[in-house]
Length: 92
Image (cartoon, rainbow, N blue to C red):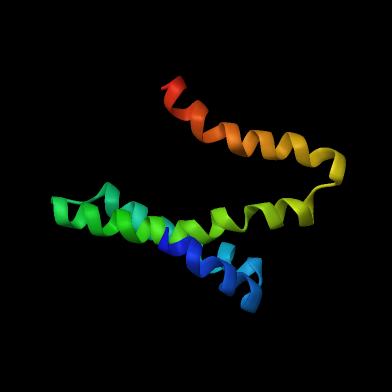
């Protein structure tokens, strides 16, 4: 939630490229921290920061789709992005 509040001003000031090239790798580092966490405190802190740095990339995804895909292709792409998080748990 806090990451998406920062995403709007950051993407306006630095562009969407900043959100993808700087914040997503930081999120990946904290996800690795979650994987190797040995206690509950480390797990909670790493999960918080992973979500904080992933939020901006998710909130500017609509603008990225508008920049990259043609109007007639956007419906399929947005459908796949929306359905993706729901298919993961149901297929596991």
